[in-house]
Length: 371
Image 1 (cartoon, one colour):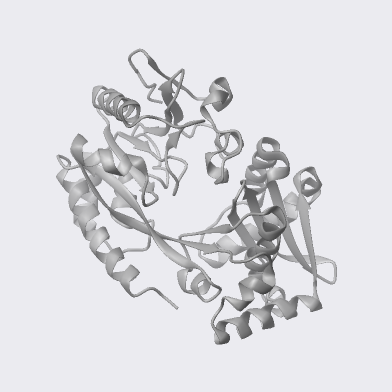
Image 2 (image 1 turned 90 degrees about the horizontal axis):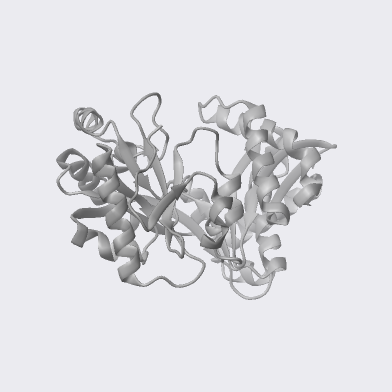
């Protein structure tokens, strides 16, 4: 493990609770909460939180080059492999060879790595970035900032620090209109509205349950099994027990901000979604399903879209964070697609070339979105 060597007044902690004052008390986006900073972690993940005692701070992941690379690494992200973009294998291999050690900001994924309980002056943020970049260089690691949302304050500063920026993925969100599900339906085009209503009615043949906080605990094993089956359908092998353990960590850290949506047929769970809620946004963290029985009740669509939409309206939230995959499916149910942007040093030519190619591909896709 690389241990960050930061100069005063900056320091790094692996345990987010050591600097709880860094996190906002009631963030709109649940991924900016202390609960997420604790619950989304995994043993040995290389994540450190770096900043000054009186704020601001950033998420970082320090990658040693030993062992398997985490999904959120600069080569795979800049090559578009995370976004299912076809990259030049030779160029990817050259980039891997050039970047065995990395320091990744935005290790939490698809949200700003910047952490602050209040406002932070641009000068403070720029000094912090400069210190993390310096520490990365001293550790022989290539720094990068991955998957930032549009408008992130970091994006304005990075070009002046010698970084190239580009789009590295597309992320689906549903912005909910009005005050209830009827307003959501009314905002859809007629043909999409009819599809959604038909899927909602299919749930009459099953049973929906929404478990909040501690009430979800008895159902985590079932949800882990369904999520494992969903991974298997995509050609990935993820153990049910491992997924259930992730859910338990999130539940322990997030409390009533953790929600499990379950759909059952004849008392047997066939579809699920795991949610983490913020003040005005709801993250659909993961999904599970068992086909063919889930299809009988439109289980995936009810568990991952319509039950979360109902929950969001009840809690006063107005944005559903759906993630970067299955964009056509999400667009057909009212989602819009927004780009996420990454930055790498211009001096690292292999990464910069991969980033430029991925940016060109995804900007063209955004101009002609699915659905």
